[in-house]
Length: 298
Image (cartoon, rainbow, N blue to C red):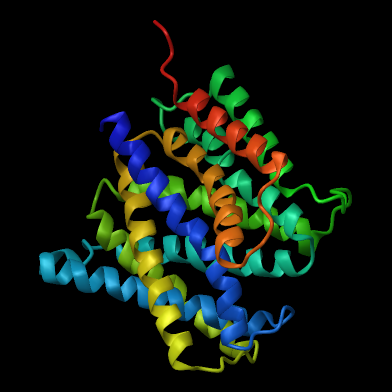
C-alpha cells in the first residue's frame, strides 16, 4: 500500500476518534450522565458500538451478502476480538478514568501506540523492533505528556485507576494484533461489524447490570447516530490498514487521537488550546510518527 494512502487513511481514522472526545462530553450532558455514573457510561458506549456494528454489517450485506456470514469456526474468534477490543477495553478505560486524572489516563492510553510496536515482533517476523522505532515512540510519548501537563502532577499509582487504564491500553494493543491475524481469513468489514456488535452488546449488558440509564431526547439520538457512524468508519479503516501494513507502521498513528481530541475540544467546547505546549506536543507527535515510519537505509 502506498505510504501517502496509509497516512491519509490513518489520519482520517484518528481524526474521527479524536472528534469523539468533545462529542462524548456533549453526550454525557444531553443524556444526563453524571461523572461517576459508570453504568450509564457503559450503556451509552454499548449502544453506540452496537449501532456502529449493525451499520457496518448492513453496508456489507448490501454490497456482498455472503460476507455477512463469517467462515466456519470464526464466530468464536470474532467474539473474542469483540470482547478484547470493545468490551474489556472500554470497561477498564471508563473505570480507570473514574479513578485517576484525565491527564494520566490520556498518557497511559497513548500506550496503544507503543505496545503493538513492542509486541508485533513476537507475532510477525517482518515487523521488527528497531532503535529508530523505539526513539520515535519516546519522542511521541513526550508529546503526549506535554499536551496533558496541567500542573496537577503525574505521580502515584492506583490499580483501579492507572492500572485499569494500562489494562485497557494492553487490551486494545492485543486486539490490533489479533484483528490482523483474522484479516487473513475474512473481509475486514465482517471483522469490524461483528466485533463492534458483539462487544457492544456485552457493554450494554454491563450497563444494565450496573443499573445505568439514559435520558433520551431527539438531539441525543441524532448525536448517538453520528457517533455510531464515526465509529463504524474509523474501526473499518483501521482494520483495513492493519490487514495491509505492519502493525508498528499503523499503531504509532494512535498518538494523534489525543492531539485531535484536544484541538477539537477547543473548537467545539471552547477550551483554551492556543498554547506553546500544544504546538510543541503536535510537533513531537508528528516527529515520532515520521521516525517510526521512516524506511531503514540499506
